[in-house]
Length: 333
Image (tube, rainbow, N blue to C red; front, side, top):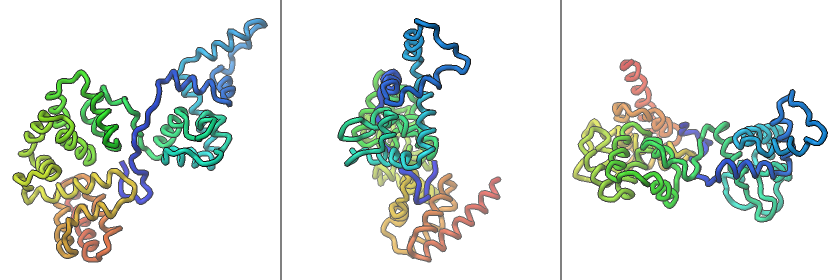
């Protein structure tokens, strides 16, 4: 995902949505649902014969739920694209997840996206449409509660990155249902090396505190793994497994990258995670070694340091490290 731009949309917490049939029923009940007729009727659809109007209308009611939702998504995209004020209000309501004081634009209510009585909040349909639009415009797939039960471990960890603690526990319980706990822990442990930094942090936390002794046993089995074992030790406070000299840079970048991956422009947190209480001269020395860690997020972490660190000695070291990183990349290719 995109990382260190100040305007990056932070990872959004999951939403709850009903099934497609319930959403489609909400579409059919929306004040502007009449617009579905033109979308669901093919252009050459014959007009109903006298006395057959009722059956024709029932046909629209029976239109497949997926077809109805696809058509309504087109209606909403068209209306929102034509009025940026509506689009911004929809996204604002989605991001805040709070009731709106006072009236909301009537068009959002007519589309069924906002509840028709106080408190004015997004309806299920509004959450569904806002999720679609954010995925299309920001590239972020906001998770839906309950949809990860059948996922593999890597997909589970990716999906759980933005979950608050209670929702994460609920989603994990659904994923564990019907699975042997020891095999589940082994599956998560086996996925850690290949996932993103934040997904890896989530996985370590699940194994440490969410899967009991089976999870902690799986973590202990990873400690001797190069790089990954050092990250596990750093995140779980296992001082008996310090990083080797050639692992230090990789661990520092991985820890900083997990913060960066969450988004939202929290550059200060990224810088603090690398600084670890060191003075500027010590930080500059640490930054200088990051290029040798061969971590895929090294360049992005160095860009944050260059753009946001307040001390010129550290930013100079970061610029030098970035040049070295690019030179090493050229050699490797």
